[in-house]
Length: 381
Image 1 (tube, rainbow, N blue to C red):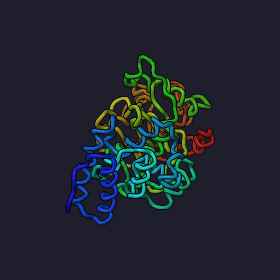
Image 2 (image 1 turned 60 degrees about the vertical axis):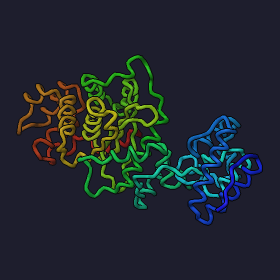
Image 3 (image 1 turned 180 degrees about the horizontal axis):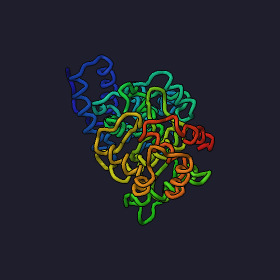
Image 4 (image 1 turned 180 degrees about the vertical axis):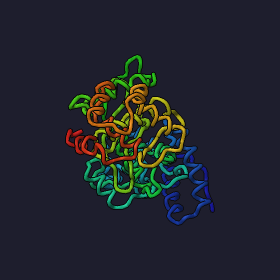
């Protein structure tokens, strides 16, 4: 293996050609030595040396005013360009040569191997993929890894996805579908403009939860939630659950800036479920989201054994119906008149009172017509 130092542009071009042949022939020692020589030549010659292939490409695009479509002659189809820029597809030898020859991007960052991936994103079952497409959040020709990268960012995806499984998710959960739903929430939340006033860094308070609860008395209460949460610095997303996810809602941090997100699935189309889920996730935002816990997922049919779930349940109940009112009003012979009076005193929709009584008395026949069944989706949230 006779390899000489690079002293001229001609030597540089010959080294690139030899590197390509060595990579194709899998001569690892030769590839390693040539890569070092090429990198040293480029460090001395180029002012900017990008630390990764994606950053090198994006730097060249920024300097040259290039759009993703301008890369198609060098990388391939539009979807392939998207996958490369999102970190979902590695560069091939042909891509590296084209980017270096036609756009002048240094070879060193292009040939630099990507950091090893510690987690592999599991693809969901076909029904979940079909649902993502029908909801309009996943593009027709987009691969699932590219979709996940678009939602979380190529670098943050696996780190965040490790935190999505909690003790309150169904054991039969399709983790690929779960990750896909979370990515879709991130994509939709990124489209929302959340005010960045002087109180932007303050945590929401339990007192504000009562403000949300009292919105339930309005016919358009669920629709008012988005505006109220935005004023509190919280993004609000309503997104149907995917097959295999068994979710009622979630609390998470927006990848781009840490803005808290409350997401609701409307899996059970009832007003009582909507308002309890909303307040439960609000309590997670107020009390439990932090830099080490950025995603909390909830199937409220699964008993919450963790302290944070017990706490979110309790505070959500108290925000909807203050404990002093419930203690005085709650009894076995509760009737429709009691239902209306309790709701009026608490300042909430009667469906909330009906659902609370059903859960605590394990009697879902009484007040079955009073929980607001079918009244959430009809509001076109």
